[in-house]
Length: 116
Length: 113
Image (cartoon, rainbow over all chains, first blue to last red):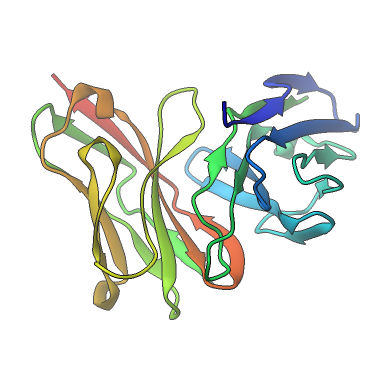
């Protein structure tokens, strides 16, 4: 089954304790992206990756890191989480369109993170 | 700066009534336009998209949307809403050779019996 998986689905942590949220896709997509969803703000892009070893900042990259060592995986790293990073996080992947922009994105189920 | 506006935070319609959700974007270049739906506790699922060609696009679940360049709009419509359409709807815009995606804040749809 084609899917994007994220782990963990729920996480409660404390300020400053490093954490990683994993994301994996089995569709051989080049493009992967991380978003955070906050009430009234919709989805805001954190980082995206056009392919292996190619990453770039989105709208709200501060406090986050990513890596893309393999095509299927795109982990999101919070080196020193703070309460303002409490949010619902989504990973997404897609093929790139013929014209070069991103095409239909497939979303993971989300990770609800609480930082105390 | 690129932005996407969904003017309606919450809309309530009766089952069987027609629906229109508004989306406006700001940018001069030709955008790629998407509508996604998010059911409670779920990720987002694509309803439809516009890249080029016919400005009226058909999607899944009976939805359609029309791209109007002169109004910078991409409104989503459905002629007859079903109770299962209750969800949150997001308009998204991507740009050619610009790989960031911008999402609107979302419109929550409530369907009355």
